[in-house]
Length: 426
Image (cartoon, rainbow, N blue to C red; front, side, top):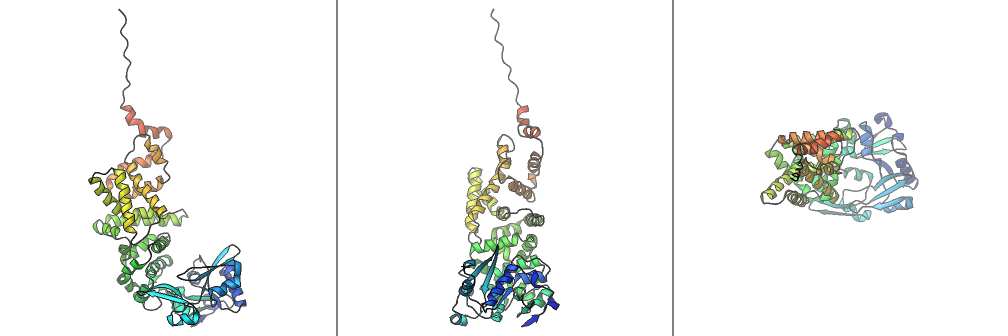
C-alpha cells in the first residue's frame, strides 16, 4: 500500500462534500473504518468537479443501518448498498468487499458466478481486498478526511498522473466477470481524456461478444451515460474501433459498412448532441436512438411498401420489428419507443407540405426533433434538400407568408366561377 499525504496530492477535506465527511465521522465514532472512494478522488486529481461522493466502510449494510436508522435505506440485490440521507444529500455507502469466494462464509455474505460472470457479489472483506476487486486502478483510491491522505493499493495514483486507464487484474477475466466494464472503459477514457493501457485495449474486441450476457435494460442505461457524457462522438469512434458498436447495433454497423455516408450521419448526430450538452441545452435519448435504429427501420419500411402496405402502416410495422429485434441486445423502454415512432412517422408527414395538415405537423410535440432528423437524413439522401429548405423556411416566415406557402400555389390555380346571367324575358 502507498500512502500519499496532502503535500503530494494537494487535495483537502473541504473539497469533499460535507455529507460524505459527516457520514465518515459518524461511522468512525462507532468504531468502523470509513473513506471516500473512487470517482470523486479521481476527478479531483484530474482537475474536474466530482458528481458523487461515495463512501466505503468496514461496517456491513445492517450495521450501517443501525448507525443511521431512519436516515438509511438498504438497496440492491446484486450489490447490497446503503443510501444514507444527510439533509438533502444522498450518499451511497458500500461495505468493503472481498474478491475471494472463500471469504463468503466468514463475512456472512454471498457470491454467485455463472459462466464466469458475477451475478451477485456480497462477500465482505478488508480495505486491501476491496481495492483489488474494483475495476480500474483510477477508481480504487481511498481518501481519509481526518488525515487528508490518499490510500493506494493498486498504483492508481501513478496511473492517473500518467493519464492511463488500467484494469485491476487480468483484463479478459475482468471483462468476462462484468462485460459492462468494456463500456465503462470507453466512457472513462473519453470523458476523462485518459488513454486505455495496452492490455486493457487489447482485451476488448475478443470479449465484445460477452455483452450479449448482460441484461438489455442495463446496457441501455450504460449507453445513455456514454451518449450523454458530452463526448459521444469520441465514444462512438472508440466503440467502433474495439468492436463494441457492432455488437450492440448490428444492423447499423452493417449499414455503415455498406454505405460510408452513414458514418458521417452518426458522427454529425453525436457531435450535435455534444454541442447541446456543452451549451447546457436539454438532450433526450429518443433522438439518438431514432437515428441509430433508422437504417433497419428504413429497410423494412421499403419492403412493406413493396408488399402493398399503406405508408403509415408500413412505418409502424417496421418500427415494431426493429424494437423487437433490438430487444435481444438493448431494451429500449416503451416511452422512448413511442417518441421514436413519432419522429419516424413525421418523416412521412413532411412529404406533404400543402394543405391545412401542415399546421398540425408544425404543432406536433416532436416536430423539432423530427425536423432535426430530416436535416440529418440529407447526408444519405441529398434529394431531400429542397423539401428540407421548405420546412426550414416555413418556420421562419410571418403568418401571411406561411399561408401563401401552404395554400398559395393551390389557390392561384383556381379560377373564380362566374355566375351565368339569366336570359332576359322576351
